[in-house]
Amino acid sequence: MVSWVAIELEINGDKKQVIVEETELLVDVLREKLGLTGTKKACGEGECGACTVLLDGEPVNSCLVLAVQVDGRKITTIEGIGKPGQLHPIQEAFINEGAIQCGYCTPGMILSAKALLDNNPEPTEAEVRRALSGNLCRCTGYQKIVKAVLEAAKRLSLQAGKKAAGTG
Image 1 (tube, rainbow, N blue to C red):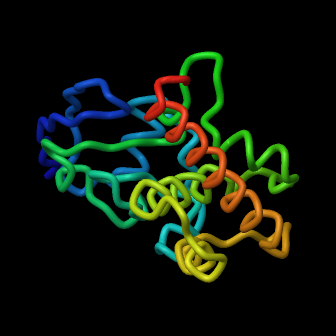
Image 2: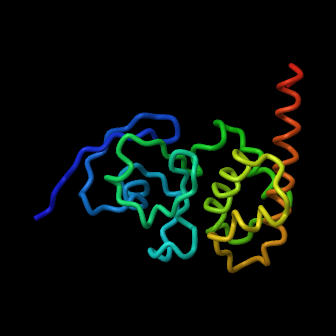
């Protein structure tokens, strides 16, 4: 017998109420019920990171999280990090550094990078590599991805400096 549960969550800044099966995975709710297809469903085992979202600001594999576990919590998907008509600086850096090939892993990579940069605005290369270690990419050698994250850190730091100085 299927058991249904109403959950409330904040998704990309919007409060939503969704009816879910108690065994339904977050990745499926995001993609099928909320239409947020930037979150990719790949391995289903938490090995590849394509389904990475931010849960209360921390990266998680949404293929390993039951939707009922996010009741009352804040979720950010790739659709929620930019502004309408404007890419997030991390997204811009990925494009400018050529860190995107097929693009399947890119949303998870960008969200893992965002979590890192939100907590550590000036990471070392080793810290970037560690933060991305849960995200697999079969197209690149990771060098351009790491370079993009380091470039995004510089841009975000520059933006923060301009805001603090009242010039941005």
